[in-house]
Length: 197
Image 1 (cartoon, rainbow, N blue to C red):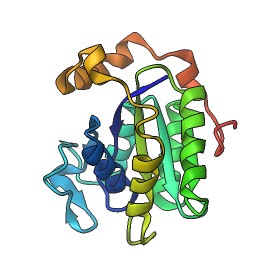
Image 2 (image 1 turned 60 degrees about the horizontal axis):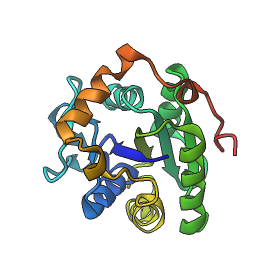
Image 3 (image 1 turned 90 degrees about the horizontal axis):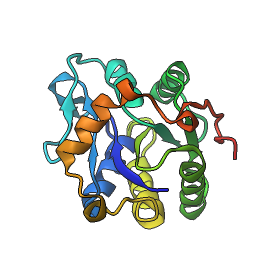
Image 4 (image 1 turned 135 degrees about the vertical axis):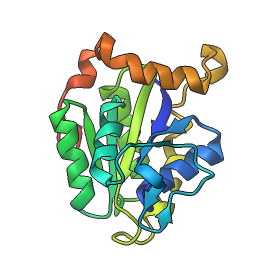
């Protein structure tokens, strides 16, 4: 199975690490950020093409990214807390599969864990939400997430975009309309911290 897009909330740390990986690998990305592109450092950098939520608070865009995705991966150092726990709560609320990854493990092991989970739990051509700790709470997590994605797994689960012939606008429209058609039953499973693996 393959991914076709990654979304995040644009916060410093894990969110922007995922976006940086997508930019480097020229992989489709997007996601909702708070109104005004708010982040803990001021604003989400303009180089990232994101959609602004109508609320300037963090939880509404967190929930929207969960709802608009087929599954969510949460990167932390240690056990999830704060906004990472809220992300898990939203995934449970909306019956979306989720996986928490402790980046204290080697990058290769973290990448293998995500690849295994994506292949087992998400439908083909899935949209994956990447979330996790902000930089102030987890120094170094931006580069840790980027390394896991770039070196480990983003290429192994990426759709051949030329083969399927979809443009970014078409992908965004598909995400917005997917709720009307229903989700693949496999994507509706609620999984534990280890994703059942």
